[in-house]
Length: 245
Image 1: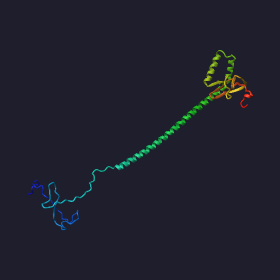
Image 2: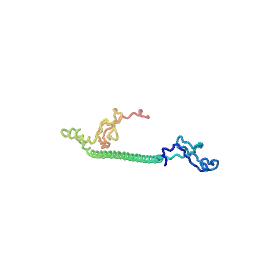
Image 3: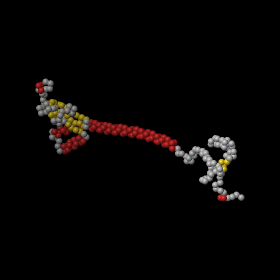
Image 4: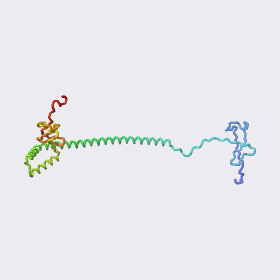
């Protein structure tokens, strides 16, 4: 009958028989080269355990083992970083391309807007010019009527209701841009005045309109007809006072 394990001695030595003739660590023959069935005590199983009686203490060789690989897989940080850099570079390139396209489209829109503004101004300017030409052509046909009205007014033949009609007519013609010029004392301008005769006067130091025979008219920049005037000039200087004499 086997004894219970609780009654077995706890410090019972354990022997291991190694029948190899060559020491696997030192590669030297054991026990003087003779093989045997000598038993060597195994390392103690715990504190306080020793080999058998009379056996010398023997240190068991240790074998360096490579460190066990970690159970957790290492993160693929290098691959992910490279992939992230490639993604960022691609996004940056796309952003630069979109920004360049936006700048190009903005420049096109600005150029089109400038061209449209210039076109609108040119059309407006041409429209005003056409209007002035049309008004000038109509008013040029009314100038003989205005001359007759003015002559009648100077003769004192315009009275009563006719005066109101003439005043209303002159007001409407002025609203259309009709402007009269050619008054006594104005500086003579060959582009605006037509000299009928010349006279000398000591009271002037330059050519002026001494008398107006017929007023001139213009609409904006369009000259309908020049004014007919008599020009007064300063008298000629004596030969000794002329420059270079």
